[in-house]
Image (cartoon, rainbow over the protein chains, first blue to last red):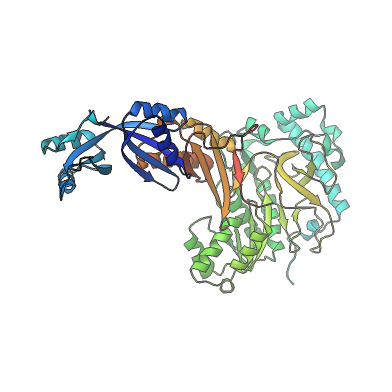
Length: 140
Length: 435
């Protein structure tokens, strides 16, 4: 099972992201990773949090739109060229990435890349074939 | 000497004679409609009025009104007053199946409509020496064919350009030395801007006049168009329900549009009570078609809010004048010359699975109408990719374009982000200052 990513539709107005993080903080939900996609009209906040179900309940109570999806997280050695090697494998196998973001583990030894694929099954197949370690839902 | 009128004996007819002519035509027209349109006959019977009660224009107020709702109810041919084989053409209003109106024309109807447009062209100083560039849309829309027919009557060399393809418009305008441009005012402004972008100065083109209508426009816009094209800009008014452009037109005095009173009787009524208001009052404009054979509407409520004046005009025409419509007595918007009802937009949203929480923002940028629609996203419509949301917006835009005939921009917004009001929702924010 992949890691669950919480997606939040963010209104284009000042304080919209702060409202979300405050709600999470007030409910003792920790943010493991976060990235904001912005457009002129709205934003999409993508989060990996300590308790996804609770976060959804908290946000929906405030009429904030959410969607939870499974995201593929690959484990990368925090060293020169670590991410590049994984991306090269995907490229060589014609796997398209919708979007991605990377973050470093607290220890600093490991890094993670969260990847959203067009064709997830094919991507997982390629990653497994090349022994790229994939993180499972232990993050929550 | 330059001809000042297309039909001088009618256009300058003393008011008393004109009204006698109207009375004579009205009596005949009421009989024609009563005998040939069962729907209108039923309306008259319901009001307890027979053709015998209508002896002159003073009796006009006794007749029932015809409204847009009647036109919808009788779609497609319930108001047709002649056998179909007598008709030579139809035109249609923009809008949905529900709102669409089919207007029928006999050859006689086309001729009188063309005459009306010819009067408008001659009022700008037009003659057979002119090259008339018709950049209104051709087709079901009346703009193109109407001015085209007028151009033929006057003897102008008529360029049936239709709207769009601006580079080609400019090329023909330049190569054929067009002298009169006919189109919507927003398209005229756009052509003016394109000329400037191509480095063609206003004094370098051969245009000298423009006949612009089918959408509301301001005096300020008139000045901008006149400046950018180096012309004198004339207003024209019309409705498909009555024939098309040319129901009323501006003369060189430009203090209102002369209504072609030998063909149409205009009244101003209180939109709430239906009562006829005295001359000079502001109210809803109502037209009675005196000469139409195929689709003769009696007391048709236009929903345009307007004022009529009958003062001596320096141009010598005696026909009554209407001001530019000051607004609408219903919620219809006119955007880029197209009639848009908020209810049409709501229908599309609901059909496409969206919430009925939306807001329509209408504005005008560089003399072009813009329409933006904010729609609240429902939780199950959210996608984690920007592409997914953009695709949703594009699909909705395409559905709206198919329904409205113009392309709005759609913005999906967060739930509850559109302001709720205590009473009736504020669905439309029209930032254009047109009236």
